[in-house]
Length: 474
Ligand SMILES: NC(=O)c1ccc[n+]([C@@H]2O[C@H](COP(=O)([O-])OP(=O)(O)OC[C@H]3O[C@@H](n4cnc5c(N)ncnc54)[C@H](OP(=O)(O)O)[C@@H]3O)[C@@H](O)[C@H]2O)c1
Image (cartoon, rainbow, N blue to C red):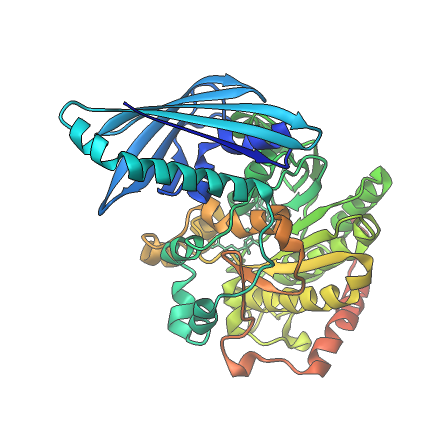
């Protein structure tokens, strides 16, 4: 048997340390050998949770299946791991040193299968070195002191070529991106997040991840019949539910106004607002308020909601964050206000969608500059191509062709979660992100808008809003 024992001390609360370590998916962020980790049981992390890890082992890799066999919150966790070469028992204990410091003692006992003991003896020194390196990694992860976001030179180079930029939209792009990610251990307890479009796809996965991180959620969905099932699904995955569910059809500005009124009268400061709800409408349709639906849902709605709840976002101790979920489709379109609301004659769903997302990206940049003194950071992200109900319903042909390379909803949602959660993500504003890195907003010269075209956007939004028939107000 090889027994490793390491002790670290970090300036984090015992609860934050316990929660981070108990979720063994985080091993990819700190373990010197783990390069893939997933939770294979659906329930929240606790007694009986199982994790599947892939770890480098010299020139090869080894798969380890871990089970939490003892779970005593804020005190200790015991995991048993099985691989084809060894079994391992990890005993991790947590103690409060003083008001702000936690001591973590990590013991791992490896028992090698018969016939491999000699190999084990030969590799013992290397194992000890890896154990020390892993615990240094854990210290760094829990210190949560990552550098400000910046595009790596490789990413900047990829964005200069259409083909390599598009390749980043795929699952392979996500996997390449994550190799260089810093750990994310920020606790979101006390953080109030308002998230639209939470009933499915990226929004639902974002809600799951933010509940796991301890956030308090106000979720906005349109279908009253989905409230119970959504809350039950969140409970099953995380052991928690949204604090509040608000109903609004966000393609109707009267609903957006009513929602804003409710949020303002509740008077609860918003730490993070995520404008995620969206859909691609293949067929032309108008809302009952008299405007083409893509423009209403994808642009006017997040514009109106964000402007209206500005008082709840402004002047926090730490900057509030607005996250606009846009789309890589916007790379095909240039901002031109007069073509944002398409007529039935020239309507193409993907074009209307892309134009609205382009405008929301420009709005992100404008708000970022305008609200700097209010301590509000505004960023946009696009998820790449993710296999969500939205894509399945609106783009069946595209999905058929690309299903092998599509990201999962979780992978698509990752950068939304990172922008909402990571401590360093409020150090930059007015950027477009993919896979936790700022990306170019233009892949083609022809989509660059002029200063005049940018300046025209907000007056245009105000003007078009004034033409809507809001008599249907709820
Ligand atoms: N998946 C991708 O590859 C991809 C790529 C680029 C951008 N995006 C963007 O990512 C965001 C999420 O998309 P997704 O793929 O997760 O789509 P999804 O699976 O269709 O989920 C969209 C969410 O928005 C809600 N929603 C739609 N129309 C609404 C309305 N009028 N009022 C209120 N809520 C409404 C939906 O509610 P219901 O459950 O009631 O329908 C659902 O919760 C969208 O903004 C989309 O444009 C996605």
